[in-house]
Length: 203
Image (cartoon, rainbow, N blue to C red; front, side):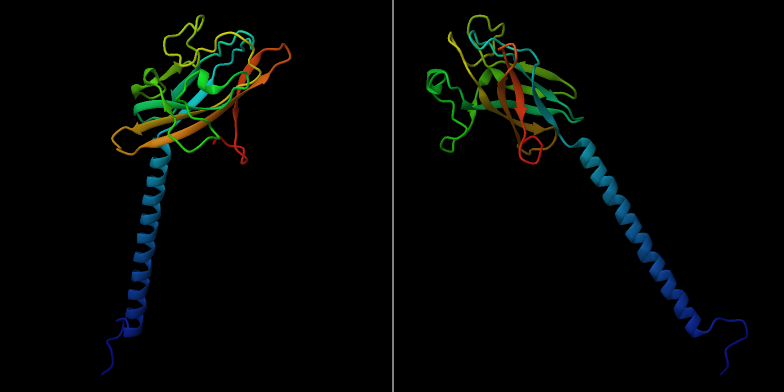
């Protein structure tokens, strides 16, 4: 029986159905791609970020009172239970264990970094920062110092500061390592600089 004039043939109807299905698949793909990009963008924006920087002042190696380090929340997410820890890499003037016996070495046997209670901070809001000191001897001008360097010349210092923290609303332990060393300036003073890894980024 011939089909009524002007009505679509079965072939045309099938082709139209295929086009509709293909368009629906593309719309689903585009929607999924937009959702993925939005999620990735949100993770980048809200991913917790913390930084450790040495203050720019120099210090006298013959009367060492190293300038403090600044712990900063450089992200938009509040950080909880921020605990800076430390490993000593190089203090050539005298044995490390005369400063703090339990502080592990960077190149020593595997062990947990040294947790120093006065450096702990319960929460760190967006753009908030605070200082930690290495020296606790006379002239340190701070109450949260760890070492008493005493007298005598220090030719070089090298340390690792490991910051343990928890992002707000996420029970995920995070940790970041920052390595610092000193260099001798033209005036004979020492100044901190951050050690980067082989890829040119912070370890």
